[in-house]
Length: 393
Image (cartoon, rainbow, N blue to C red):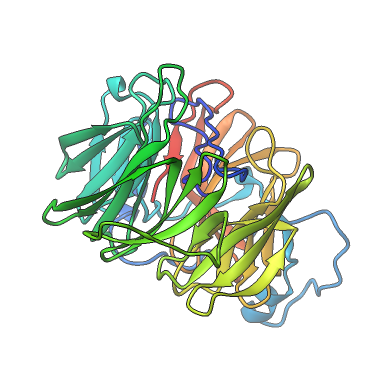
């Protein structure tokens, strides 16, 4: 699930769900992991997930590795206890109170409270969204070269470009009882120089940053009547441009070419369309899955269940960008709670999940149907208010 849509599973284990536009707008690392986290892409995975308990017609003796990968079922069941250990996540993540990415790590003081999200802002910099008072109000703190920099209050959404050169965040003021006020400020940031441009909006609230590329920001906001609109804003411009082709967006691709738009909602779920933004046309619609993330260069969209309610998700899936059909779907079965997901790169998905009182970060490859551990199982879950990990970007 996209944490700009649903903030779930805080480091301290407190679960937060943010709802936007009627959508579900939601310990120390081992030396082996620390060494594996530096540089380069993610190596192929050789651990295999267990097929879901359905009858399979595939051969039990594939003639080659390629045939084996192709013959694995579309629907699989994730079992964290059976996965081999792999490299650490290449994206930012939180381990206990320590933020890690690449060769960089820094420890957050306990006074920072639970962490909601982390957005990388360069080789050794990150924007950490946290809640010092654990009261639903976010603070965005900049960290660079292991040192704490400025903090901005009332931030509810943050995201960086894929190359980490620019970022954007939304400042949403609230009343004393926590109700969002009908105004917000969107800020674009050049991560190398620290240069900023801001856009102030009145009559709207609940801004969510969906994508950033260079000086362009795609964000959505709610009107007083609850209508959600997708906007394109170029840093420095005095006003954004509405993108009418994709109302009620749940995701925008990192290259700003595709958007997922929630086209209908019912008590038992929602239907989402994939929209080609330049052509302003729908590519396909699915009522089986939600679309949580779109990454430039990938053959699939990261999806979740069309109906969400309760603790975590029951599944996550990779959806073919051409057809909307599942390339691969993993469920947690009766043992695993899927808390959140994020695309690590064009070929891999990171999964924050819990099993039998412990939490891990798994890495899954939809093309092969294989998974491994990116961060090992550790004691603690959201239920016990001591979940050891949190995914960032």
